[in-house]
Image (cartoon, rainbow, N blue to C red; front, side, top):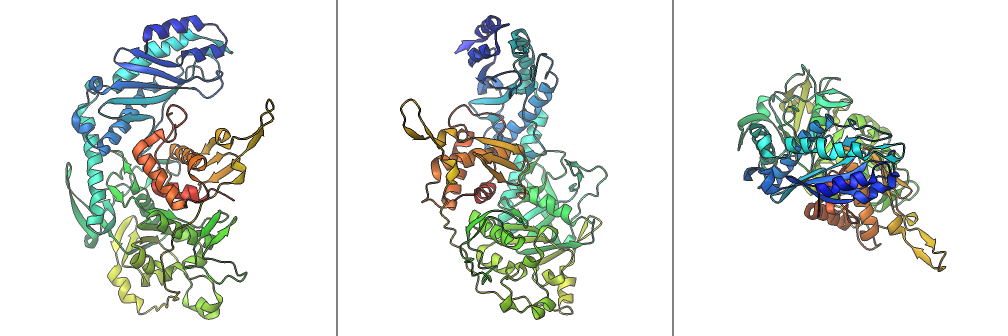
Length: 577
Protein backbone atom coordinates (compact mmCIF):
# COMPACT_ATOMS: atom_id res chain seq x y z
CA UNK A 1 0.00 0.00 0.00
CA UNK A 2 1.30 3.43 -0.92
CA UNK A 3 1.43 6.50 1.31
CA UNK A 4 -0.10 9.95 1.07
CA UNK A 5 3.30 11.20 -0.13
CA UNK A 6 3.05 8.85 -3.11
CA UNK A 7 -0.39 10.23 -3.91
CA UNK A 8 0.90 13.78 -3.69
CA UNK A 9 3.72 12.93 -6.08
CA UNK A 10 1.34 11.33 -8.56
CA UNK A 11 -0.96 14.32 -8.45
CA UNK A 12 1.85 16.64 -9.37
CA UNK A 13 3.01 14.34 -12.16
CA UNK A 14 -0.40 14.31 -13.88
CA UNK A 15 -1.09 18.03 -13.53
CA UNK A 16 -2.04 19.64 -16.87
CA UNK A 17 -2.17 16.28 -18.61
CA UNK A 18 -5.18 14.88 -20.46
CA UNK A 19 -8.00 13.76 -18.14
CA UNK A 20 -7.49 9.97 -18.61
CA UNK A 21 -4.16 10.32 -16.78
CA UNK A 22 -6.19 10.48 -13.56
CA UNK A 23 -6.75 6.71 -13.98
CA UNK A 24 -3.24 6.16 -12.62
CA UNK A 25 -4.37 7.34 -9.19
CA UNK A 26 -6.44 4.24 -8.49
CA UNK A 27 -5.30 2.41 -5.39
CA UNK A 28 -5.05 2.86 -1.62
CA UNK A 29 -2.95 5.40 0.27
CA UNK A 30 -2.07 5.59 3.94
CA UNK A 31 -2.88 8.93 5.56
CA UNK A 32 -2.35 9.75 9.23
CA UNK A 33 -5.14 7.87 11.02
CA UNK A 34 -6.91 6.43 7.97
CA UNK A 35 -6.58 4.91 4.50
CA UNK A 36 -7.90 6.67 1.40
CA UNK A 37 -8.86 4.36 -1.48
CA UNK A 38 -9.64 5.54 -5.01
CA UNK A 39 -11.86 2.81 -6.45
CA UNK A 40 -13.06 4.24 -9.75
CA UNK A 41 -11.98 7.29 -11.73
CA UNK A 42 -14.50 9.08 -13.92
CA UNK A 43 -13.86 9.23 -17.64
CA UNK A 44 -14.10 13.01 -17.95
CA UNK A 45 -15.11 15.95 -15.72
CA UNK A 46 -18.70 15.81 -16.98
CA UNK A 47 -19.20 12.10 -16.19
CA UNK A 48 -20.44 10.61 -12.90
CA UNK A 49 -17.92 11.53 -10.19
CA UNK A 50 -15.18 9.18 -9.03
CA UNK A 51 -15.76 6.60 -6.27
CA UNK A 52 -13.56 6.74 -3.20
CA UNK A 53 -13.72 5.39 0.31
CA UNK A 54 -12.02 5.99 3.63
CA UNK A 55 -11.16 3.26 6.12
CA UNK A 56 -10.47 3.99 9.78
CA UNK A 57 -9.18 1.14 11.94
CA UNK A 58 -11.40 0.35 14.90
CA UNK A 59 -8.63 0.98 17.42
CA UNK A 60 -8.02 4.43 15.93
CA UNK A 61 -11.73 5.35 15.76
CA UNK A 62 -11.98 4.54 19.47
CA UNK A 63 -15.70 3.82 19.75
CA UNK A 64 -16.72 2.09 23.00
CA UNK A 65 -17.95 -1.49 22.93
CA UNK A 66 -21.65 -0.72 23.42
CA UNK A 67 -21.74 1.07 20.05
CA UNK A 68 -20.57 -2.00 18.15
CA UNK A 69 -21.63 -5.10 20.07
CA UNK A 70 -24.96 -5.68 18.28
CA UNK A 71 -26.20 -5.39 14.72
CA UNK A 72 -28.73 -2.79 15.88
CA UNK A 73 -26.02 -0.66 17.47
CA UNK A 74 -23.70 -0.91 14.47
CA UNK A 75 -26.42 0.14 12.05
CA UNK A 76 -27.37 3.08 14.26
CA UNK A 77 -23.73 4.15 14.61
CA UNK A 78 -23.15 3.95 10.85
CA UNK A 79 -26.26 6.06 10.23
CA UNK A 80 -25.12 8.68 12.76
CA UNK A 81 -21.57 8.90 11.39
CA UNK A 82 -22.88 9.23 7.84
CA UNK A 83 -25.08 12.16 8.88
CA UNK A 84 -22.22 13.89 10.66
CA UNK A 85 -19.85 13.36 7.72
CA UNK A 86 -22.46 14.65 5.26
CA UNK A 87 -22.79 17.86 7.28
CA UNK A 88 -19.02 18.33 7.22
CA UNK A 89 -18.74 17.65 3.49
CA UNK A 90 -21.31 20.33 2.68
CA UNK A 91 -18.79 22.94 3.83
CA UNK A 92 -16.24 21.92 1.19
CA UNK A 93 -18.16 20.63 -1.83
CA UNK A 94 -17.34 22.68 -4.96
CA UNK A 95 -14.75 24.79 -3.13
CA UNK A 96 -12.30 23.33 -5.63
CA UNK A 97 -13.17 24.74 -9.03
CA UNK A 98 -13.16 23.54 -12.63
CA UNK A 99 -15.33 22.18 -15.41
CA UNK A 100 -18.35 19.91 -15.03
CA UNK A 101 -18.44 18.14 -11.68
CA UNK A 102 -14.99 19.37 -10.66
CA UNK A 103 -14.77 19.87 -6.91
CA UNK A 104 -17.95 17.98 -6.06
CA UNK A 105 -17.81 15.97 -2.83
CA UNK A 106 -21.02 13.94 -2.63
CA UNK A 107 -22.10 11.57 0.11
CA UNK A 108 -25.43 9.90 0.82
CA UNK A 109 -27.91 12.21 2.55
CA UNK A 110 -30.08 9.98 4.75
CA UNK A 111 -33.75 10.72 5.29
CA UNK A 112 -35.90 10.27 8.38
CA UNK A 113 -35.53 6.48 8.34
CA UNK A 114 -32.46 4.67 9.61
CA UNK A 115 -31.40 2.25 6.86
CA UNK A 116 -28.45 -0.07 6.39
CA UNK A 117 -26.43 1.65 3.68
CA UNK A 118 -23.29 0.90 1.71
CA UNK A 119 -22.14 4.49 2.27
CA UNK A 120 -21.08 3.71 5.84
CA UNK A 121 -20.41 0.40 7.51
CA UNK A 122 -19.13 -0.13 11.04
CA UNK A 123 -17.53 -3.09 12.76
CA UNK A 124 -15.10 -3.64 15.63
CA UNK A 125 -12.36 -4.00 13.04
CA UNK A 126 -12.95 -0.82 11.01
CA UNK A 127 -15.22 1.96 9.83
CA UNK A 128 -15.66 2.33 6.07
CA UNK A 129 -17.18 5.45 4.55
CA UNK A 130 -17.88 5.63 0.80
CA UNK A 131 -18.57 8.74 -1.23
CA UNK A 132 -17.87 10.46 -4.57
CA UNK A 133 -15.45 13.17 -5.65
CA UNK A 134 -15.47 15.14 -8.87
CA UNK A 135 -11.82 15.19 -9.98
CA UNK A 136 -11.10 18.78 -11.08
CA UNK A 137 -10.14 19.81 -14.60
CA UNK A 138 -10.14 22.85 -16.81
CA UNK A 139 -11.97 21.62 -19.88
CA UNK A 140 -10.48 18.12 -20.13
CA UNK A 141 -7.09 19.14 -18.82
CA UNK A 142 -6.25 17.91 -15.33
CA UNK A 143 -6.10 20.47 -12.54
CA UNK A 144 -4.57 18.29 -9.84
CA UNK A 145 -3.73 21.22 -7.58
CA UNK A 146 -7.45 21.53 -6.84
CA UNK A 147 -7.75 17.78 -6.23
CA UNK A 148 -4.78 18.04 -3.88
CA UNK A 149 -6.79 20.53 -1.81
CA UNK A 150 -9.62 18.03 -1.55
CA UNK A 151 -7.44 15.09 -0.52
CA UNK A 152 -4.98 16.90 1.71
CA UNK A 153 -6.94 19.81 3.17
CA UNK A 154 -10.71 19.29 3.01
CA UNK A 155 -11.15 15.54 3.54
CA UNK A 156 -8.78 15.28 6.55
CA UNK A 157 -10.90 17.90 8.33
CA UNK A 158 -14.12 16.02 7.50
CA UNK A 159 -12.67 12.69 8.66
CA UNK A 160 -11.27 14.14 11.86
CA UNK A 161 -14.59 15.74 12.81
CA UNK A 162 -16.74 12.74 11.88
CA UNK A 163 -15.14 9.35 12.36
CA UNK A 164 -13.32 9.54 15.70
CA UNK A 165 -15.22 9.09 18.94
CA UNK A 166 -13.04 11.61 20.75
CA UNK A 167 -14.29 14.41 18.50
CA UNK A 168 -18.00 13.55 18.66
CA UNK A 169 -20.63 14.42 21.25
CA UNK A 170 -20.54 11.28 23.40
CA UNK A 171 -23.96 12.02 24.90
CA UNK A 172 -25.57 12.17 21.44
CA UNK A 173 -23.84 8.94 20.41
CA UNK A 174 -25.17 7.19 23.50
CA UNK A 175 -28.70 8.55 23.04
CA UNK A 176 -28.72 7.45 19.42
CA UNK A 177 -27.65 3.89 20.29
CA UNK A 178 -30.15 3.70 23.14
CA UNK A 179 -32.99 4.89 20.90
CA UNK A 180 -32.18 2.19 18.34
CA UNK A 181 -32.07 -0.49 21.03
CA UNK A 182 -35.39 0.66 22.49
CA UNK A 183 -36.96 0.53 19.02
CA UNK A 184 -35.65 -3.00 18.50
CA UNK A 185 -37.03 -4.00 21.91
CA UNK A 186 -40.53 -2.75 21.02
CA UNK A 187 -40.41 -4.57 17.69
CA UNK A 188 -39.57 -7.84 19.42
CA UNK A 189 -42.31 -7.20 21.98
CA UNK A 190 -45.07 -6.93 19.38
CA UNK A 191 -45.28 -10.66 18.69
CA UNK A 192 -45.11 -11.52 22.39
CA UNK A 193 -48.13 -9.30 23.06
CA UNK A 194 -49.98 -10.36 19.88
CA UNK A 195 -49.80 -6.86 18.46
CA UNK A 196 -49.27 -5.72 14.89
CA UNK A 197 -48.20 -2.16 15.72
CA UNK A 198 -47.52 0.30 18.53
CA UNK A 199 -48.10 4.07 18.30
CA UNK A 200 -46.70 6.00 21.25
CA UNK A 201 -48.58 8.75 23.03
CA UNK A 202 -47.15 12.10 22.00
CA UNK A 203 -46.06 10.91 18.56
CA UNK A 204 -46.27 13.46 15.75
CA UNK A 205 -47.76 11.64 12.76
CA UNK A 206 -48.51 14.35 10.14
CA UNK A 207 -45.66 15.29 7.83
CA UNK A 208 -44.55 18.77 6.86
CA UNK A 209 -45.77 18.48 3.26
CA UNK A 210 -46.24 16.05 0.40
CA UNK A 211 -42.58 16.42 -0.53
CA UNK A 212 -41.10 16.56 2.98
CA UNK A 213 -41.09 13.73 5.51
CA UNK A 214 -40.13 15.98 8.41
CA UNK A 215 -42.72 16.42 11.19
CA UNK A 216 -45.42 19.05 10.77
CA UNK A 217 -45.09 21.99 13.12
CA UNK A 218 -48.11 22.53 15.35
CA UNK A 219 -49.55 19.07 14.64
CA UNK A 220 -51.85 17.38 17.15
CA UNK A 221 -49.82 14.88 19.22
CA UNK A 222 -51.14 11.32 19.14
CA UNK A 223 -53.09 10.18 22.21
CA UNK A 224 -54.23 6.57 22.51
CA UNK A 225 -57.80 5.65 23.49
CA UNK A 226 -57.80 4.38 27.07
CA UNK A 227 -59.18 1.00 25.98
CA UNK A 228 -56.22 0.40 23.62
CA UNK A 229 -53.48 2.02 25.73
CA UNK A 230 -50.64 -0.22 26.82
CA UNK A 231 -47.37 0.42 28.64
CA UNK A 232 -43.92 -0.50 27.35
CA UNK A 233 -41.03 -0.55 29.83
CA UNK A 234 -38.08 0.16 27.53
CA UNK A 235 -34.51 -0.86 28.41
CA UNK A 236 -33.21 2.72 28.29
CA UNK A 237 -36.03 5.25 28.20
CA UNK A 238 -38.17 3.42 30.72
CA UNK A 239 -41.95 3.40 30.66
CA UNK A 240 -43.88 4.84 27.73
CA UNK A 241 -47.53 4.46 26.85
CA UNK A 242 -49.31 4.24 23.53
CA UNK A 243 -51.85 2.45 21.40
CA UNK A 244 -51.34 -1.24 20.82
CA UNK A 245 -52.95 -2.40 17.58
CA UNK A 246 -54.04 -5.98 18.16
CA UNK A 247 -53.72 -8.85 15.74
CA UNK A 248 -56.84 -9.55 13.71
CA UNK A 249 -58.83 -7.09 11.62
CA UNK A 250 -58.57 -3.41 12.56
CA UNK A 251 -60.74 -0.81 10.86
CA UNK A 252 -59.83 2.90 10.83
CA UNK A 253 -62.76 5.19 10.01
CA UNK A 254 -63.67 8.86 10.25
CA UNK A 255 -64.50 11.90 8.22
CA UNK A 256 -62.34 13.27 5.43
CA UNK A 257 -59.17 15.06 6.57
CA UNK A 258 -59.48 13.76 10.13
CA UNK A 259 -56.30 11.69 10.05
CA UNK A 260 -57.25 8.18 8.88
CA UNK A 261 -54.65 7.94 6.12
CA UNK A 262 -52.12 9.83 8.24
CA UNK A 263 -52.33 7.12 10.90
CA UNK A 264 -52.10 4.36 8.31
CA UNK A 265 -49.12 6.05 6.66
CA UNK A 266 -47.29 6.24 9.97
CA UNK A 267 -48.02 2.57 10.62
CA UNK A 268 -46.87 1.48 7.15
CA UNK A 269 -43.51 3.24 7.68
CA UNK A 270 -43.22 1.87 11.20
CA UNK A 271 -41.39 -1.05 9.60
CA UNK A 272 -38.36 1.29 9.75
CA UNK A 273 -36.69 2.87 12.75
CA UNK A 274 -36.86 6.67 12.69
CA UNK A 275 -34.29 9.15 13.92
CA UNK A 276 -34.65 11.29 17.04
CA UNK A 277 -36.87 14.31 16.44
CA UNK A 278 -38.86 12.68 13.65
CA UNK A 279 -41.99 12.39 15.77
CA UNK A 280 -42.47 8.72 14.84
CA UNK A 281 -39.53 7.34 16.84
CA UNK A 282 -41.84 5.04 18.77
CA UNK A 283 -44.26 4.12 15.99
CA UNK A 284 -43.24 0.51 15.48
CA UNK A 285 -44.89 -1.99 13.13
CA UNK A 286 -44.51 -5.69 12.41
CA UNK A 287 -41.59 -5.65 9.99
CA UNK A 288 -43.32 -8.03 7.56
CA UNK A 289 -46.17 -5.55 6.97
CA UNK A 290 -47.10 -4.86 3.34
CA UNK A 291 -49.05 -1.81 2.15
CA UNK A 292 -51.05 -2.93 -0.87
CA UNK A 293 -53.13 -1.10 -3.45
CA UNK A 294 -54.76 -1.73 -6.81
CA UNK A 295 -52.16 -1.60 -9.55
CA UNK A 296 -53.78 -1.48 -12.95
CA UNK A 297 -51.51 -2.52 -15.79
CA UNK A 298 -48.98 -4.49 -13.74
CA UNK A 299 -47.42 -7.75 -14.87
CA UNK A 300 -48.59 -10.95 -13.14
CA UNK A 301 -47.25 -14.44 -13.78
CA UNK A 302 -48.58 -17.81 -12.54
CA UNK A 303 -50.26 -16.56 -9.35
CA UNK A 304 -53.09 -18.59 -7.81
CA UNK A 305 -55.79 -15.96 -7.28
CA UNK A 306 -58.66 -18.48 -7.30
CA UNK A 307 -59.47 -17.71 -3.66
CA UNK A 308 -60.60 -14.28 -4.83
CA UNK A 309 -61.36 -14.62 -8.54
CA UNK A 310 -62.53 -17.68 -10.47
CA UNK A 311 -64.78 -18.80 -13.31
CA UNK A 312 -63.80 -15.98 -15.63
CA UNK A 313 -66.06 -15.72 -18.71
CA UNK A 314 -63.15 -16.42 -21.05
CA UNK A 315 -62.31 -19.61 -19.17
CA UNK A 316 -58.92 -18.30 -18.08
CA UNK A 317 -57.29 -20.41 -15.36
CA UNK A 318 -57.07 -18.32 -12.19
CA UNK A 319 -55.15 -21.00 -10.30
CA UNK A 320 -52.17 -20.02 -12.50
CA UNK A 321 -53.22 -16.54 -13.46
CA UNK A 322 -50.99 -14.47 -15.69
CA UNK A 323 -51.38 -11.23 -17.60
CA UNK A 324 -49.30 -8.43 -19.04
CA UNK A 325 -51.94 -5.87 -18.08
CA UNK A 326 -53.77 -6.65 -14.83
CA UNK A 327 -56.99 -4.95 -13.80
CA UNK A 328 -57.34 -3.28 -10.42
CA UNK A 329 -59.06 -6.31 -8.88
CA UNK A 330 -56.74 -8.97 -10.33
CA UNK A 331 -53.66 -6.96 -9.39
CA UNK A 332 -54.86 -6.62 -5.81
CA UNK A 333 -55.73 -10.30 -5.58
CA UNK A 334 -52.30 -11.20 -6.92
CA UNK A 335 -50.65 -8.79 -4.48
CA UNK A 336 -52.29 -10.47 -1.49
CA UNK A 337 -51.27 -13.96 -2.61
CA UNK A 338 -47.71 -12.78 -3.33
CA UNK A 339 -47.59 -11.21 0.15
CA UNK A 340 -48.60 -14.53 1.71
CA UNK A 341 -45.74 -16.22 -0.16
CA UNK A 342 -43.33 -13.56 1.13
CA UNK A 343 -44.31 -14.25 4.75
CA UNK A 344 -46.38 -11.11 5.33
CA UNK A 345 -48.24 -11.10 8.67
CA UNK A 346 -49.87 -7.67 8.36
CA UNK A 347 -51.75 -6.34 5.36
CA UNK A 348 -52.32 -2.58 5.14
CA UNK A 349 -55.12 -1.32 2.87
CA UNK A 350 -56.74 2.02 2.14
CA UNK A 351 -60.15 1.93 0.55
CA UNK A 352 -59.26 5.02 -1.51
CA UNK A 353 -56.47 3.18 -3.38
CA UNK A 354 -58.16 -0.20 -3.63
CA UNK A 355 -60.35 -1.62 -6.38
CA UNK A 356 -63.94 -1.04 -5.23
CA UNK A 357 -65.31 -4.25 -6.77
CA UNK A 358 -62.52 -6.27 -5.17
CA UNK A 359 -63.07 -4.95 -1.64
CA UNK A 360 -66.82 -5.34 -1.11
CA UNK A 361 -70.23 -5.96 -2.74
CA UNK A 362 -73.16 -4.69 -0.72
CA UNK A 363 -76.34 -6.70 -0.16
CA UNK A 364 -78.32 -4.85 -2.84
CA UNK A 365 -75.64 -5.54 -5.47
CA UNK A 366 -75.61 -9.20 -4.44
CA UNK A 367 -79.33 -9.34 -5.20
CA UNK A 368 -78.98 -7.61 -8.57
CA UNK A 369 -75.92 -9.61 -9.69
CA UNK A 370 -76.14 -13.04 -8.11
CA UNK A 371 -72.94 -14.61 -6.72
CA UNK A 372 -72.97 -17.35 -9.38
CA UNK A 373 -72.60 -14.61 -12.03
CA UNK A 374 -69.84 -12.74 -10.21
CA UNK A 375 -66.32 -14.23 -10.44
CA UNK A 376 -64.95 -12.09 -7.58
CA UNK A 377 -65.12 -13.17 -3.96
CA UNK A 378 -64.55 -9.78 -2.31
CA UNK A 379 -61.92 -9.08 0.31
CA UNK A 380 -64.57 -8.49 2.98
CA UNK A 381 -65.45 -12.19 2.64
CA UNK A 382 -61.84 -13.35 2.83
CA UNK A 383 -60.24 -11.14 5.49
CA UNK A 384 -61.06 -13.52 8.34
CA UNK A 385 -59.85 -16.49 6.28
CA UNK A 386 -56.52 -14.74 5.78
CA UNK A 387 -56.14 -14.28 9.53
CA UNK A 388 -57.31 -17.75 10.57
CA UNK A 389 -55.46 -19.68 7.88
CA UNK A 390 -52.34 -17.58 7.20
CA UNK A 391 -52.01 -15.55 10.38
CA UNK A 392 -52.26 -12.38 8.27
CA UNK A 393 -53.84 -9.48 10.13
CA UNK A 394 -55.37 -6.49 8.34
CA UNK A 395 -55.45 -2.77 9.08
CA UNK A 396 -57.92 -1.12 6.75
CA UNK A 397 -58.86 2.52 6.26
CA UNK A 398 -62.49 2.82 5.11
CA UNK A 399 -64.80 5.75 4.56
CA UNK A 400 -67.63 4.70 2.30
CA UNK A 401 -68.82 1.18 3.10
CA UNK A 402 -70.21 -0.01 6.42
CA UNK A 403 -69.80 -3.65 5.41
CA UNK A 404 -66.31 -3.75 6.96
CA UNK A 405 -67.76 -3.08 10.42
CA UNK A 406 -69.19 -6.59 10.38
CA UNK A 407 -65.79 -8.26 10.13
CA UNK A 408 -63.68 -5.89 12.23
CA UNK A 409 -62.23 -6.97 15.59
CA UNK A 410 -61.28 -3.39 16.46
CA UNK A 411 -62.73 -0.14 15.11
CA UNK A 412 -60.83 3.13 15.54
CA UNK A 413 -62.60 6.39 14.74
CA UNK A 414 -60.30 9.30 13.89
CA UNK A 415 -61.82 12.58 15.09
CA UNK A 416 -59.63 15.64 14.32
CA UNK A 417 -56.50 13.44 14.53
CA UNK A 418 -57.62 11.93 17.85
CA UNK A 419 -58.33 8.18 17.83
CA UNK A 420 -61.43 6.88 19.59
CA UNK A 421 -62.17 3.18 20.15
CA UNK A 422 -65.78 2.66 18.99
CA UNK A 423 -65.67 -1.12 18.68
CA UNK A 424 -68.41 -1.79 21.22
CA UNK A 425 -70.71 0.87 19.78
CA UNK A 426 -70.27 -0.43 16.24
CA UNK A 427 -70.91 -4.04 17.21
CA UNK A 428 -74.18 -3.01 18.85
CA UNK A 429 -75.21 -1.19 15.67
CA UNK A 430 -74.35 -4.00 13.25
CA UNK A 431 -77.64 -5.77 13.94
CA UNK A 432 -79.50 -2.64 12.79
CA UNK A 433 -77.64 -2.62 9.46
CA UNK A 434 -77.35 -6.28 8.46
CA UNK A 435 -74.84 -7.34 5.87
CA UNK A 436 -74.43 -10.82 4.47
CA UNK A 437 -70.94 -11.52 3.28
CA UNK A 438 -70.68 -13.67 0.20
CA UNK A 439 -69.36 -17.11 0.96
CA UNK A 440 -66.56 -18.28 -1.26
CA UNK A 441 -65.07 -21.73 -1.57
CA UNK A 442 -62.93 -23.00 1.29
CA UNK A 443 -59.76 -20.94 1.53
CA UNK A 444 -56.49 -22.81 1.08
CA UNK A 445 -53.00 -21.39 1.20
CA UNK A 446 -51.48 -21.32 -2.31
CA UNK A 447 -48.43 -23.52 -2.80
CA UNK A 448 -46.20 -20.63 -3.81
CA UNK A 449 -44.26 -22.84 -6.24
CA UNK A 450 -43.83 -20.54 -9.24
CA UNK A 451 -40.86 -21.31 -11.47
CA UNK A 452 -38.95 -18.23 -12.62
CA UNK A 453 -37.67 -17.84 -16.15
CA UNK A 454 -35.60 -15.12 -17.76
CA UNK A 455 -36.69 -12.46 -20.17
CA UNK A 456 -35.30 -13.85 -23.42
CA UNK A 457 -34.00 -10.40 -24.31
CA UNK A 458 -31.65 -10.49 -21.31
CA UNK A 459 -29.38 -13.08 -22.89
CA UNK A 460 -27.74 -11.31 -25.83
CA UNK A 461 -25.42 -12.92 -28.34
CA UNK A 462 -22.69 -11.38 -30.42
CA UNK A 463 -20.24 -12.59 -33.02
CA UNK A 464 -16.53 -12.39 -32.37
CA UNK A 465 -15.44 -10.96 -35.73
CA UNK A 466 -11.88 -12.14 -35.25
CA UNK A 467 -12.74 -15.81 -34.79
CA UNK A 468 -16.28 -15.91 -36.22
CA UNK A 469 -17.51 -17.56 -33.01
CA UNK A 470 -20.98 -16.65 -31.71
CA UNK A 471 -20.73 -15.89 -28.00
CA UNK A 472 -23.58 -15.60 -25.51
CA UNK A 473 -22.30 -12.89 -23.20
CA UNK A 474 -25.59 -11.59 -21.82
CA UNK A 475 -24.17 -11.93 -18.32
CA UNK A 476 -21.33 -9.54 -19.06
CA UNK A 477 -23.42 -6.98 -20.92
CA UNK A 478 -26.39 -6.75 -18.55
CA UNK A 479 -26.65 -3.21 -17.20
CA UNK A 480 -28.78 -1.66 -14.47
CA UNK A 481 -29.79 2.00 -14.48
CA UNK A 482 -31.78 3.58 -11.67
CA UNK A 483 -34.38 5.92 -13.12
CA UNK A 484 -35.52 7.35 -9.80
CA UNK A 485 -36.91 6.19 -6.47
CA UNK A 486 -39.60 4.06 -8.09
CA UNK A 487 -38.11 2.31 -11.13
CA UNK A 488 -34.95 0.96 -12.69
CA UNK A 489 -33.97 -0.39 -16.08
CA UNK A 490 -32.31 -3.78 -16.37
CA UNK A 491 -31.12 -4.57 -19.86
CA UNK A 492 -33.86 -3.00 -21.98
CA UNK A 493 -36.67 -3.67 -19.49
CA UNK A 494 -38.10 -1.13 -17.04
CA UNK A 495 -39.09 -2.58 -13.66
CA UNK A 496 -41.86 -0.36 -12.29
CA UNK A 497 -41.97 -0.08 -8.49
CA UNK A 498 -44.27 2.95 -8.25
CA UNK A 499 -46.85 1.13 -6.19
CA UNK A 500 -44.40 -0.36 -3.69
CA UNK A 501 -45.22 2.33 -1.15
CA UNK A 502 -42.82 1.21 1.57
CA UNK A 503 -39.75 1.92 -0.52
CA UNK A 504 -38.53 5.21 0.95
CA UNK A 505 -35.15 5.77 -0.67
CA UNK A 506 -33.67 5.71 -4.16
CA UNK A 507 -30.77 3.68 -2.74
CA UNK A 508 -33.15 0.82 -1.92
CA UNK A 509 -34.30 0.86 -5.54
CA UNK A 510 -30.66 0.75 -6.66
CA UNK A 511 -30.03 -2.26 -4.42
CA UNK A 512 -33.12 -4.04 -5.80
CA UNK A 513 -31.79 -3.46 -9.30
CA UNK A 514 -28.47 -5.05 -8.38
CA UNK A 515 -30.28 -7.94 -6.67
CA UNK A 516 -32.33 -8.62 -9.80
CA UNK A 517 -29.18 -8.43 -11.92
CA UNK A 518 -27.55 -11.01 -9.63
CA UNK A 519 -30.65 -13.21 -9.84
CA UNK A 520 -30.79 -13.05 -13.65
CA UNK A 521 -27.10 -13.82 -13.97
CA UNK A 522 -26.80 -16.55 -11.31
CA UNK A 523 -30.12 -17.79 -9.91
CA UNK A 524 -32.91 -17.82 -12.51
CA UNK A 525 -32.42 -21.14 -14.26
CA UNK A 526 -35.95 -22.22 -15.23
CA UNK A 527 -36.00 -24.71 -12.34
CA UNK A 528 -35.87 -22.59 -9.19
CA UNK A 529 -39.06 -21.08 -7.81
CA UNK A 530 -39.55 -17.40 -7.18
CA UNK A 531 -39.76 -18.13 -3.44
CA UNK A 532 -36.42 -19.98 -3.51
CA UNK A 533 -34.71 -17.18 -5.43
CA UNK A 534 -36.09 -14.50 -3.11
CA UNK A 535 -34.95 -16.52 -0.10
CA UNK A 536 -31.43 -16.86 -1.50
CA UNK A 537 -31.23 -13.13 -2.21
CA UNK A 538 -32.50 -12.22 1.26
CA UNK A 539 -30.05 -14.63 2.94
CA UNK A 540 -27.13 -13.46 0.82
CA UNK A 541 -27.86 -9.84 1.69
CA UNK A 542 -28.11 -10.78 5.36
CA UNK A 543 -24.78 -12.63 5.41
CA UNK A 544 -22.75 -10.83 2.73
CA UNK A 545 -24.38 -7.42 2.81
CA UNK A 546 -23.37 -5.27 -0.12
CA UNK A 547 -20.70 -7.70 -1.30
CA UNK A 548 -23.51 -9.38 -3.22
CA UNK A 549 -24.10 -6.27 -5.31
CA UNK A 550 -20.41 -5.54 -5.83
CA UNK A 551 -19.40 -9.00 -6.99
CA UNK A 552 -17.32 -7.72 -9.93
CA UNK A 553 -15.63 -4.84 -8.20
CA UNK A 554 -15.52 -2.77 -5.04
CA UNK A 555 -18.75 -1.99 -3.24
CA UNK A 556 -19.94 1.51 -4.07
CA UNK A 557 -21.94 4.08 -2.16
CA UNK A 558 -25.57 4.61 -3.14
CA UNK A 559 -27.14 1.35 -1.94
CA UNK A 560 -29.52 0.66 0.95
CA UNK A 561 -30.75 -2.78 1.97
CA UNK A 562 -34.37 -3.54 1.05
CA UNK A 563 -36.59 -5.89 3.03
CA UNK A 564 -37.39 -9.39 1.87
CA UNK A 565 -40.90 -8.09 1.09
CA UNK A 566 -39.56 -5.60 -1.46
CA UNK A 567 -37.31 -8.27 -3.00
CA UNK A 568 -40.44 -10.36 -3.61
CA UNK A 569 -42.25 -7.34 -5.05
CA UNK A 570 -39.36 -6.63 -7.39
CA UNK A 571 -39.15 -10.22 -8.64
CA UNK A 572 -42.91 -10.29 -9.17
CA UNK A 573 -42.75 -7.19 -11.38
CA UNK A 574 -39.88 -8.46 -13.52
CA UNK A 575 -41.50 -9.25 -16.85
CA UNK A 576 -40.24 -12.61 -18.06
CA UNK A 577 -41.06 -15.04 -20.82
